[in-house]
Length: 144
Image (cartoon, rainbow, N blue to C red; front, side, top):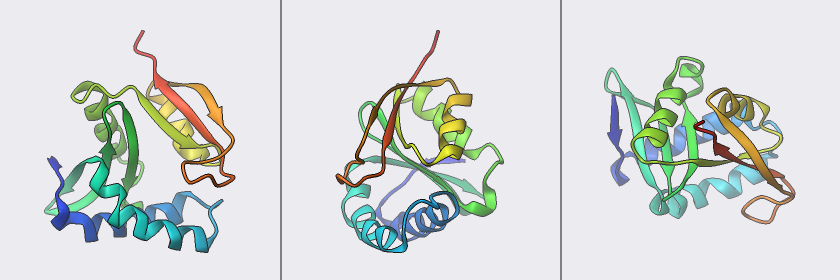
């Protein structure tokens, strides 16, 4: 079930974020993950619209969006490849009218996931949002 998330969910969401990043972002060194974690928890969560996916009373994934961008999409590693990411992405596109997502170039799993859903690469940035040397691909939903 898809629900709007609130600050009370943040401890669970950051745990899902960390476990998911460790499972999918093997290009990020440990110190980068440790530096990002408090930024995600104390800043980024407050600047996006967060929705959680709850199954059997447990939060197993979430999506954070801005006005026109999927800013974050993380699924509990134990529940990956079960359609939850697809449900959250379809919700963002259909209900929130989101057309864009940025993906780390090294995160081939995420890139393949978004491309399978209809997103196309529009351009590339050499640096990530923090100015670090992790290239970012900017994708846009191609509806037609």
